[in-house]
Length: 154
Image 1 (cartoon, rainbow, N blue to C red):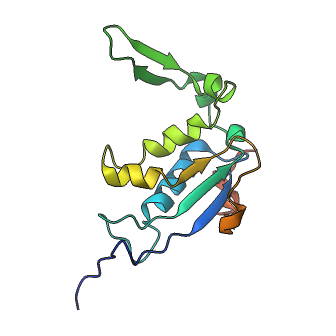
Image 2: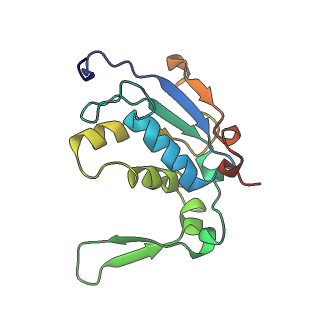
């Protein structure tokens, strides 16, 4: 019996919608990263993009457990000496682009800096509100919060 290896032309990508309202950020990001990579499929092949297109709505209503909403820090560097910048999830979620919290959380759970990871991240669409323009693809709705009681925070 030979090991199965998926070919890019044979892979069929599904579309899924996840409502992030009240969902815990880290658990949601781990679930989405798994779907984007295709690790939930029996025909998963590490060097082929077998993942699904993921649409996340209500990204501005995600929650953190514990005191992470106030105490967690995100760091980035400008590239200049002494150019380290920091921010908190509260500032990002209350700012102009609240969907970046989820985008960055998912990005940091994907393989680092490869063409395959960039292609897989290109299939992630995050929207701060409850509307999305992908109804024509007939996406399947996944109730993430009901999969485990720890996925949602009240």
